[in-house]
Length: 398
Image (cartoon, rainbow, N blue to C red):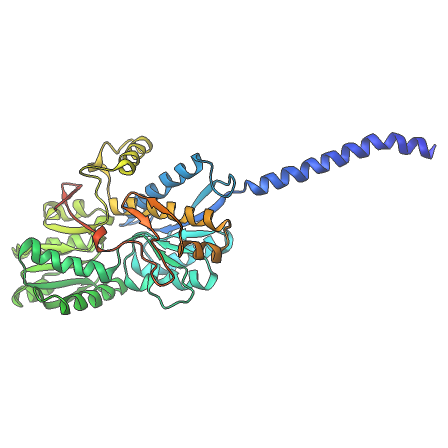
């Protein structure tokens, strides 16, 4: 009876074993196919929400391309997880911690606000999680003294943009004396240092005054009056969109027609709407323009952008192009690093970014070893272009 019972049980036992093996194999396959989580911390609400949307669009189109091509590491899809920093450093730090500790992201991307990215950088280095800045330009974000350094950037860097702004004021408008209007926060401080250094190296331009203002200020005529009295022939502006619009209105109320040469913060919000007709007087820096002849990557990207976002009918409808272009290239570079590393380990990704093999033909340029252990900034002065608003459209000036 015992033998018979055992024989009768064998098929059932074999069935259970086969089922167990199948479940194990399925679990292994599922694990292999687990998505690779990548994060994004940016202003997704508030006055700079447009910047967050621009970055999102660039990141998402890159993710769509990578996933459509089979994903990474043998078929793992990328999952983009976003958090809103509301342009506030404490909120950004909380969001970054959520992505690192709760979502276990392999790497994450930043937004427009330098104070937020400056707050996040130490956490990224502490937790050994690569952090890619795609808009914030404060010099100290990547040049942060950490070794090893897990913070990278596909964006402008203040120390180099400031050289461009002074040169442009002189070349475009013939200004030999400029006045600085700077937001009173760490990003303004970063540019003050960069502009003073650029001024010392530029015999053609002299800074005749440095004025600061708060983000909530609505009347900046006292600061502008002092710059005008000091003989400023052009204004160099460093600020995001809402206070930048107030500066332009204050200038208009004074009846002062000094040209305005601006960093790109004004392109991250509703600047044309808030500044009104004066918006077009400000010439500002970008890293890409969708106008003019496009290469194969630019043409394909614009087609995908128009297909995914029907409100985009052409290049004139790409708001905040710098955020979109930087984010697109940055996502592809991070994906290449993950593939080269063969891993989602933070150290492995950092090392791969610092020694990327081959060339990547991106939207902004062709990247050939864009980073090294000593340099974590992929873009330089040759990658900057100057633009202005015509209505609510961004158009090139040179």
